[in-house]
Image (cartoon, rainbow, N blue to C red; front, side, top):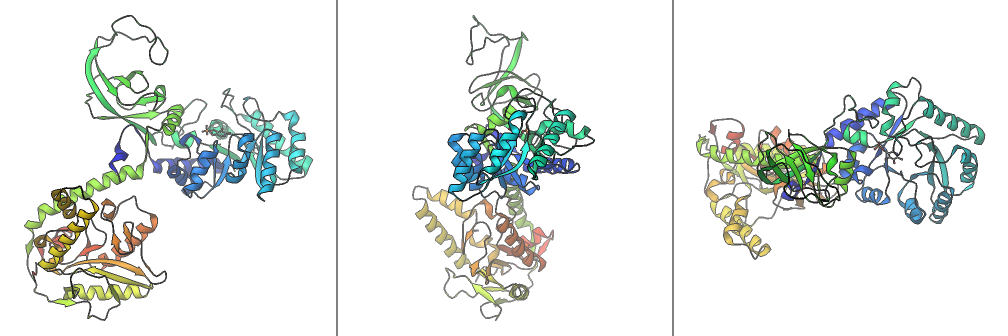
Length: 584
Ligand SMILES: *Cc1c(COP(=O)(O)O)cnc(C)c1O
């Protein structure tokens, strides 16, 4: 997590809500035999969103722009890609290279696609768009037969379907009549040319009302959905679709001025920044707040405040609101719903941070961890030690299958209390069966050893940050290394461990480590949401092994486990620990 992700303006993207919407729509359309292509153009091919769609079961992603398709490909999004805007001649080569399918309405373009497809020995799939009344893209029905004939003759091109797009330009509603027409055209082509069309792609989010009222959807077996997935509404009347979230996207802006001022301007009124001559209502003196967001960030008229306030104007960098009775202070954040235009503009603006919910949650998670850590620090002195005087035993001499990380302390014996010794033995045996070995990083440490560790880390950080003051360095170190008398490692009940994977001959990846070297940052917090799925699985394995043996996992370090000592007692809700400090 970086604090920059909490900057404003930002658009917070709730990936779980988007996934829920996608799954619900897949089921709804699926119940009538219609498959869903996810359209990513409104979100500029944002890879986090694309992955959420793929995880929800969408296999084809459509975007109007090759740049966005490349963005998703570069991010490793696993899907088939469709270019939804008729390709331009000048981009034909890139279209063949990056898109698997494209929607087309010009023969000359398809011919160009064919040339490039042959050049690179590929087959590019084509869906022919048919004009059904909205008068944007599409072949006129009269030119269809000849076009199909020509397309079928082209090498490197596969005709995989026909499609239509309504409601986008003229607002023409998809209905039984025009969808019936599309079905008839599909049947006609299949019969005349003795082929099967894989896709009969009926439209976009505007097809919802037709879908729910249709008794028979005819040959239509596909739709391309964007807005209804992101904003949870159909697009003919912008009514919410039952069961969908309409608040998956949130624009967050920040107050930079809050004052009581008149509601009417003073002076002769001419044009403003955007060329309008504005009119204002006289409401007397009002509380006016200014937000650090403007037309260069988002299409302001497409915003709806979630609080009871009113947008009364905007220029390129400011939004002015009437706070009404809402308390607004400088530095506070305000949330807004976005319509489609606002969403597109905010996702496109360089100035708006795009923050997926897992990162928002990461911020919350880290705060919780730190809160919990402060609670522990306060509780530590209240824990009574009822020392059980069990001896320290050396793991080096145990004969267990273990790997020992090199220690700053010469002749380090990897000592632990007797019960811990036995637990490590059992964990070692369990890992043997999985072709893995426990790596012991550190166990009991004398005060002298702990001091060595502290000094070593200070030295390393001094080298890394030559400009930092020593106080700053020590604070950084104290974040992860305790002073000698406070370290749980002085009790013989603490164990630092990682796992070695014998099959792949490497230290397993836990999200912050490169082999044995661990980068100390907040992703070391055991359940940090923003680590890779592999790291999550590996942490689960490591933590599971220790917790099943009665250890507790450290609040901040996924590799540190405690048994019997004060940290363990706090976490287990006990009043007494059984292992106190052994100094040397
Ligand atoms: C934008 C677009 C879509 C998706 O439209 P939504 O209203 O966002 O569902 C589908 N098909 C084509 C051709 C488009 O241009």
